[in-house]
Image 1 (tube, one colour):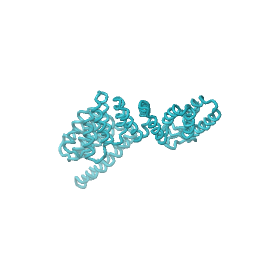
Image 2 (cartoon, one colour):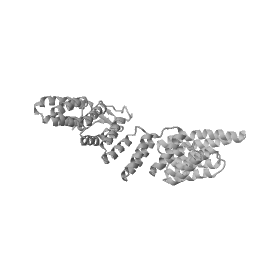
Image 3 (cartoon, one colour):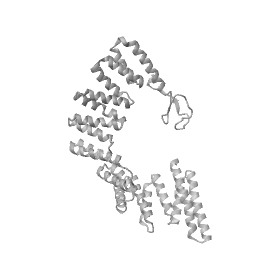
Image 4 (cartoon, one colour):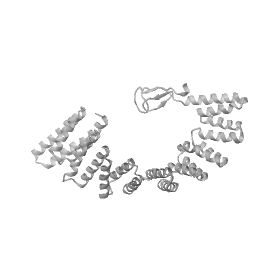
Length: 392
């Protein structure tokens, strides 16, 4: 049996055993109560013993007998339903939860919980239309059921019904106070992308504006806006949108660098290009903006100026791509070969010093020294000597 499932069951069922014993103790006389408590407790712990011995079928059988013997143990029914679903026995979970909902005597909270559980059963079974109906009924009856709203959002994402996903995300935000702007912006961008592909730029622009309203820092909205403006031939607007993207999230610089450079070139605006690339060099750890700036410097100031720029930057941020660029530029200036070779030796030493000699095959942790137990994931015998391109 899966250890995670076993752990869950032990946590879930031990309190149920204690609660059932206490509950039984309140319902009868002293002698009858003592017998009932012993029977319930013994049954539960026999079931738990089966679980510990990885005999879940026998455990389930005992719990079902106990549930049949005492229909008032609703918590037992819920635990069984959850167990069935986790084991992949969704049909059994559905039947159990349907039976709970159909029976009388449940409190409002218990009935609500049973409906939520049945909705999750339907989702697990792929019956999204039934789950949607159930969760919608719950929300209409009580808008303070955030679990139902969250499930509906997941369903509408799976169905790519972005309008309903947006509507229910807003309802969820109103009900819980949890900000949903980042998610809503993604949904608006999906609608903007659909409009863009359908050749409807006005609708796409309107959706992008809605995305910015939901999340002013949406990098996806900036990329989409740039694509739309580039397609329309509005290079100035495209540059403004695309420059905003790495300023909001520097990791997205590679996504916008080429279209930005093309737009700068079409507009013959090398001054703006140089200023932007210089800013990115200060913020971005990779070598891409340095290479882009070196090409502009080479065209405007010559090979030697470009080589000096690359040489300075590659010493500060050792890079194989930087090395290759420095070699290419130096080949055009053979007189500088000794100095260039010294630079390359220094860069190679830095690259080698930074490369991990060992790496954990389980979690990827890199280390300079060998460890029999990985300091990160704590697994034994998984840290091994590392082969990489620097060793080739």
